[in-house]
Length: 265
Length: 312
Image 1 (cartoon, each protein chain N blue to C red):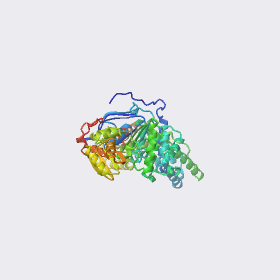
Image 2 (cartoon, helix red, strand yellow; image 1 turned 90 degrees about the vertical axis):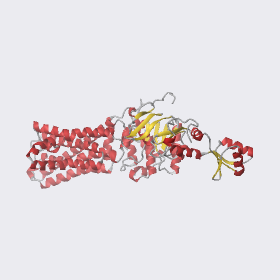
Image 3 (tube, one colour; image 1 turned 180 degrees about the horizontal axis):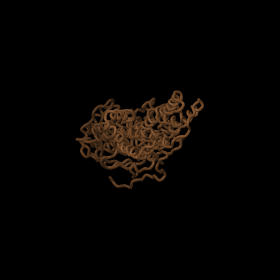
Image 4 (cartoon, chains in turn blue, cyan; image 1 turned 30 degrees about the vertical axis):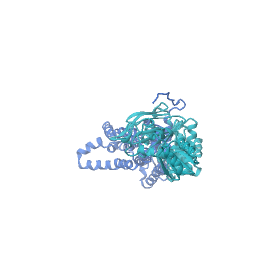
């Protein structure tokens, strides 16, 4: 081949796609399909229904804003991570990753955008859920209860925001690790429901395991965040950190590495 | 301009692309031709950074795809028209891409009009699209960012004859305006009518490349001509007498000679010709021959076409 001058592409007119735009696109993608839209709507709807039932059946003295916030936080904890799992795995399950990563070949930027979009969506849903909790506290007040309106800052931050954030990151890690929507959702429920149950049963059977459990089982370790005074002790924080390395940091690192290398077909 | 430089891609022991080099020039349509599994798609995937090469590299306008900022504005890609979320409408799929590239919404409507998808079709979800409609949407997607380079994998797949003609005109016009077009196909007829340059690949290796004439000339040193006359028997005899191999083909004759030689023989013999053309079958035979299962063993190390250098 002769070495003729290679005509170069003039790229001066097209700056790199800003991350904010990629985040906007990812939020749009999370909500523009029937599955995505109705799932997000259903989460809020479910919070509404659970709060309604709770206000109807709970005794008057446990209808404080804090109680209702805890109830809606519990619902979100199970379902918010699914939203981010769908956002990540659809790139592979629906194969649109081919286009996503062609339009932005710097994969790490897409991964960052997806993560930020997931956190942004989760934050919006959390705000909506808190508003609903607030409304139902007012309903409780109007129907004879005399609820406490103040909220313990530790509950709000540790029990509501932090635990949900952890759930989202775990969901993100599982999603990148499996890159398959049904498998991701099942794996998340195994992690969130079956694992703590198994840890509980094993702890009942063996006092040795009971001591070890919070160090290796992330759900068990997080208990102090949303119970008691919502303030984990130094040892409990250490347990959260240790089990968090196993269930959050390692999967997240491996999953991200996989997403950066995977061959989208 | 796309430059593929000694590209090799292996999957374990399997070599999908084996030391492939070629160049796609601006202002020309380059046809990438080969049977299924020859390595066309893999090569195109490496072009846009979806697959990492084992060895070698590909640059577009001197840049690696990864280093092109907002690449959709420079390189239009259609690798698989079905690789989109089936729950999104055609319009939504284009809108997402337009938003990613930072293009105005009006661009989406322009492209939908260009590929002939009406409002109703654009609003339908992809799962309700026919393959032809998906293909049109994919072409709209590739053209969205007004790129100077187009990389299209089997773009004619699923298009009806009118659609194929439309696409041919579209790509021709695009190349005439200075664009670089690379399109792949496993169908010779699809490519030979539009491509200025053809690259034949079989089993991961380039078996021949060049324009139509170069390829035919290199086929077996002897051009093939299809001829029909008012007196085929007399013409056949005259051609045989002149030393050209003749065999009947349909209503006419297939001659191992150039159209000029056949024409001259007819003139001397005083036979009136009704049809005279360079043998398309020659190219097809060449294509099948070069890309057949044992092509790899038959043509070791064939790079650029050198007339007569490719064994028949």
